[in-house]
Amino acid sequence: MNHLACQNRESLEQIQLDQLRVLIRELLAGNAYYGPILRAAGITEDIESLRAFSERMPFSYKQELVEDQRLHPPFGTNLTYPLEQYTRFSQTSATTGKPLRWLDTPESWGWMLGNWRRVFQEAGVNAQDHVYFAFSFGPFLGFWTAYESALSLGCLCMPGGGLSSPARLISILENDVTVLCCTPTYAIRLAEVAAEERIDISKSKVRRIIVAGEPGGSIPSTRARIEFLWPGATVFDHHGMTEVGPVSFECPGQAGTLHIIEASYYAEVIDPVSGAPAEPYGTGELVLTTLGRVAAPLLRYRTGDLVVVSPDSPCICGSYEMALPGGILARTDDMVVVRGVNIFPSAIEDVMRRCVDLADYRVLIRSKRAMTELELEVEPASDCLDTKAMVDHIEHEMRDVFAMRIPVKLVPPGTLPRFEMKAKRWMKV
Image 1 (cartoon, rainbow, N blue to C red):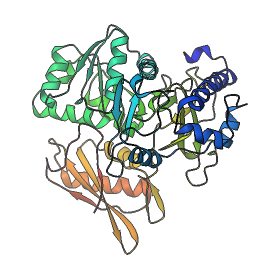
Image 2: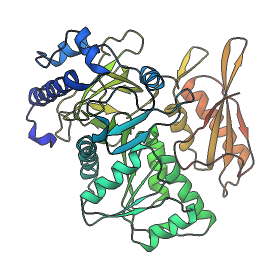
Image 3: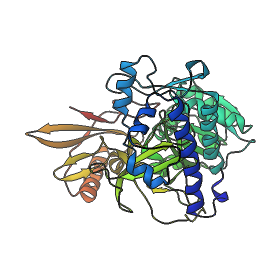
Image 4: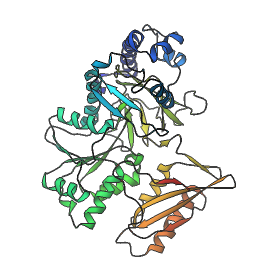
């Protein structure tokens, strides 16, 4: 569904309600997990409005799904159809030591490919593009849906699994790659390796770098850093989850703003504590209902993603879909309170990526006498000429942004770990 086909917010919500009713009908008929929950809430396929659905339907939580799979191994009871109809297997990263498995039928898989096509199309990707997927393919959903969706658009698709970073860089250059898909951290890492190996990526034909997996793509300093390191390329952000599929795309008219694909998702933003709707421009938790993933759905799923919603509609790009300025700010369990100040990883990332002499960093979280304190470990870039000035600069920036002193410790080059997938820079010590 093209957002331009929705002439106003009301028509978009009618599309959502129509799909929700179909979803509820199928779940009541065959889903052993959600069927009883819907009946207990008094929800039928004749639900009168989206608001009525929000008022009656309880939230879904990841831990509940993990427990369901523990009690009903291996796939749990959240399956709408007989097992023999399912052809796709995915799983999340470990949750409390156990990954969450997800199955899809060809129909639900096709729904997700359609969502990824929307992401690519909004990024300006077309059949003439050579698209490179710079990660090792595993059981996580995003790799496969992105790859197969690009195939369906007629793109020349190149998997980078099993290759070293230098080998990936050579492949990108030799095969005239125009679109690079990776995490923000790995886009920076590839440029770092290029400098180490004397590979000139200024000669690459990469024009779009589509990033996901971390908040960095919507953080101004991080995207600026990536675009500086990859001359001629523009960063395009996106986010999704194995449990729900591809959720958002970056607004073509406002860098750093994500739009929810609302023809596919019923999205709500709530106060993480009270569960009530968040105020416009207030920080809240994103809650999603997957309208088209009927075979293995989620209803009012608390994603744990913290966002801010803009009330402006339509957006300057013409879309009436929910706009999230700043993209995904953090996870609900990632925020740290230090001396009464709420500190999000994205805020630290924004400060750190402004420092051109920085190669990488790590945040150490310490608890002292029931107080939480932060310490930064910083690794200088290979061409940094004055490491003391770099440390002083970062400490000064931290004081300006957070109105507190955060200690900064210099570590030797090559000390900190590098990441291909989601970076793990925050550590409790």
